[in-house]
Image 1 (cartoon, one colour):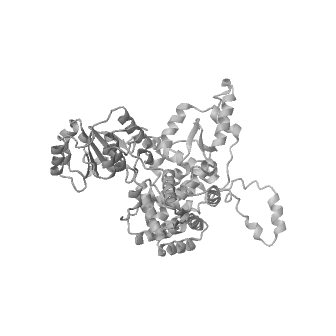
Image 2: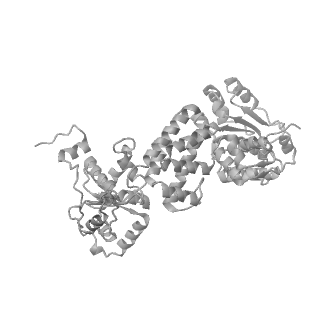
Image 3: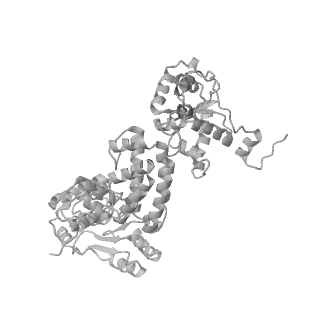
Length: 553
């Protein structure tokens, strides 16, 4: 007997073997049991998610003479289906039979009664490939077919099916199969085939399949062609030009430790060995996503590439707002539609930009140190130490990287004085920050506030809430003062901005609830920066209504 590839060998033979489409299977089974079978269906979804397999199983089940929860596989109809020669289950590939003449043949045949089963079932695969004329010729038959005829249109692109056809069909959307389900099915097949495997290798194949079970089995087949007796992560990485998570983490940390030459050298070595540069860039994006998830809640169940210790190592080395910058750099390079050789150059440039991102001052607690005093390097250390101990009334200006830590009593006073209407007004401005995503000079303010929420507003202050790293970055003196000037100059909002983390937010809410109502709405004094961008009334009106506004003197 000729060899049969895995995805054909392990095509679902029963509804219970279909992976990841539980609600569709349950709906179809209930339709059969209650005899509420529609005359036309559309099965839509990505490739390899089971559309054609379910269509065939449904055709077998509705013709089975002893159907209960599954087809019996023993009656004449089931046996004919299993042998692949059931006369009443007709499959048509619309990619090569997409004209009016092909549809006319079907229209002529539907009038004849089934030869063996109860229903004559037409499964039209890749139905979106039918021409508009072919669809129109089929319309009347779809609307009023004989009672013994059922149409199933399977498609990966339902938008191309004309609306008049869609409106005559029941539509089922097949979703991508989860990585866990693909892993589970793949392991079952490996056990049946008596093949040893590494779980990480199976996980990598499931991830590469991107939700398609058939794709996963095709990838597995390729690996087993290399080594029929075992499946290892190293083999998967070599065959498909992948890089290991460890290599990707080391590469990313090299970039942010200033070792850009080493990082680019590593990248070129990986490329020479056959690594897919686009896949590498996508993997780095996924790693950053894992780090951000872990930084926000510390939960490991949502991580897909990293474990807790790996995520923690990156958090210690790279500030959160730099991670956001890196996301944009990688997204930009992935948008380059070039051949792999050119893509390597773009990725090298991307690494250089990411290395520059780390130089933003005052973004981690390790960086938030007062600059070393020049006098320490002078030849008279004793004199300099004495001078350090003496008060220096002239040096009142705080270092730019000084971390402002607002007192909780002060923040509570702002919250007690907060006004809902002011918050709504400020929220409208807050929602406009996306406009500055691509504006070079003002993008930093978008990056500073992305992922945060506006918690409260009074007439002199705004409280922003985010995770601990986001709150600290906003509260850095230089960032905070620049943000004040930006809001004042751009929108005429003369308010201080204070940032809190989620734990502080909950503490403020609890204390607010415990405060008697008569003590609320008491004014609080807020000391503001000396703004460099005070607006005139005319400036504010222009920001609101455009340049055509005229102010009477």
